[in-house]
Each structure stands twice: as structure tokens, then as C-alpha cells.
Image 1 (cartoon, rainbow, N blue to C red):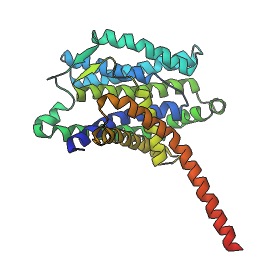
Image 2 (cartoon, rainbow, N blue to C red; image 1 turned 30 degrees about the vertical axis):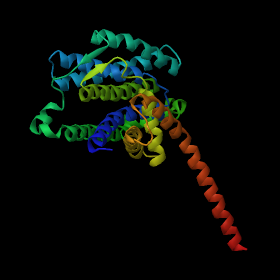
Image 3 (spheres, rainbow, N blue to C red; image 1 turned 90 degrees about the vertical axis):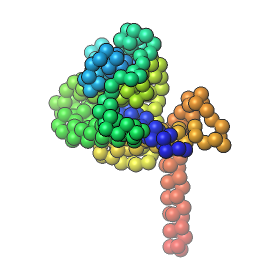
Image 4 (cartoon, one colour; image 1 turned 90 degrees about the horizontal axis):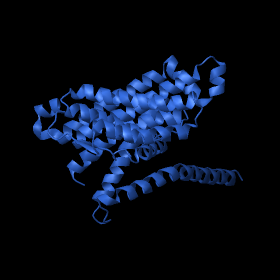
Amino acid sequence: MSLIALLGATEIGLIFALVALGVLISFRILNFPDLTADGSFPLGGAVAATLIAGGHDPWLATLAGTSAGAVAGLITAWLNVRLNILQLLASILVMIALYSVNLRIMGAPNMPLIGADTVFSPFIARAPDSQYLIQPLVLAVIVVIAKLALDAFFASQSGLAMRATGANARMARAQGVATERMVLLGMAISNALIALAGALYVQTQGGADISMGIGTIVVGLAAVIIGETLIPGRTIMVATLAAVLGALVYRLFIALALNADFIGLQAQDLNLITALLVGFALVLPSLKRKFAAKRSAVTKGSTAHDAR
């Protein structure tokens, strides 16, 4: 694999690290099965691309896309906590609605950004020949800031209340926690991060497309599961680090598979590779537990034999 391909995979991995952090909040911390990600990811991209194409500041456009994702998450949570619609069904309803919303925002199935200024433009202008290196570096800084901000938030009183809501909502209510507000806040933060990833994605790819959100939640879940397998831990700092690392490893695996000439895979095989990697990620924790159990049994058996 060439250096440019490696940097490209790292770049996409860093973008989906934000998605993984958002999925971590909804699925792991709030215990809220949320499929809104498949709509909020392209929503962030659609809002950012439309504003950038209209001549607005790319940083403000990115912030607007992030805010739109937060609103999408709020609507999903509101359908659940106020109208008592099942979590999964509420997220599916919002995801379906966002497809039409994104088309309305862009006015077409795609929105090109070729030649437009992006959040990366000021950095690239200083070193035009280092674009493939500068974009991953800028994304790395954004991901680190997002991770540290989440670590600080979940160490605060509100963050602890949100974690308690996901762990045991009934017990949290008994302790005076406003669990409904915590769900609303958590889902807003989750989808804001995912929409931020979408806004940055369209600026690295040169445009937005209505279908770019397909499979976003699958990638986010795979990244979280892979990260938890690689770095097991119970603290929030370890969990966020694992999510980021999982996204990077996931994208690097895909890049390696697509660039392995002896395998013969091509770009149209991306969904197949994704399905295989996600399936492996889902099976990996159980395989790890079985291996640990067998190893423990062998160790106990040898200890008992030595004692005799």
C-alpha cells in the first residue's frame, strides 16, 4: 500500500472516529439503539456543502452542519421520551425523514465543492504540496479535542448523571436525575458528532452525496466493538480512546484489503469487505472470551497436576 493510500485511509478513519464517539454515546452510554446516524451524517454534509457552495465561511458551515445533527438527535430522543415511541422505531422514522430533508437542503442528489474553500484551505495554502499530510493532521487535532471534551463532560455532574441514566434509568430517577433530559442531551451530542463527521467528510471528498450516509451506523458500531476488543476497559477515557483507535484500525483494514493485489478485490467490493469486517468484529469478543476460558482451564489443570 502506497503512502498516499495509507494517509487517505487514516484521514477517513479519523473522520469516522467522530462517528464512533457518537455511536459510543448512544449505544454504550445511553443504551439507546439509534439508527439516526445514517441520516445525520449526510445531514451534516448537506448543510455544510450547501453553505460552503453559497460562499459562506467553511467553519461556520461546519458548525451549522453539526448543529443540524444535534437537532436530528433531539427529535429522535423527543419521539421516544415524549411520545413513547420505541427507541429503534423513533430513530428509523427520523432517518427516513432526513433523506427527504437532505434532498431539500441540497436541491439535488449531490452538491460539488470542487475549488471551494474548506476548513483545510488555510493550512493547505501554506504548503500546497503537503495536502495529503495536512488534512489528516487537522482531523487528528479535531478528534483529539472532541475526545478530551467528552472525557471532561462525562467526568462532570451532568456527564455522570447521563451515564447513570444509561446504566439504570429507574435508579437514576430515584436519585433525582432528570433522565428524560439526559436522553435528550445525550442524543443531541451523539448526532452532533456524527454530523460533524459528515461536514468534514464532504470537505475532504470534494462534495456531498445523498447516499453517503448508507452504512454509517454499521461502521460506527464496528469501530466501537473493535476498539473495545483491542483496549478493554471500564473508564470513559479508555472507552473514547478505544472508539477512536477502532475506527482507525477498521479503515486501515479496508484499505489493506482493497490494495492487496493478490486478493483481487476492487472498489465495488467495499460493502462485502465491510460486512465481513463487521461480522468478524461481532464474533471477536466471544472468541476472545472462549480463548481466555480455555487458557484459564489449562492453567488450573497444570497447577492441580503440579500440586499432586
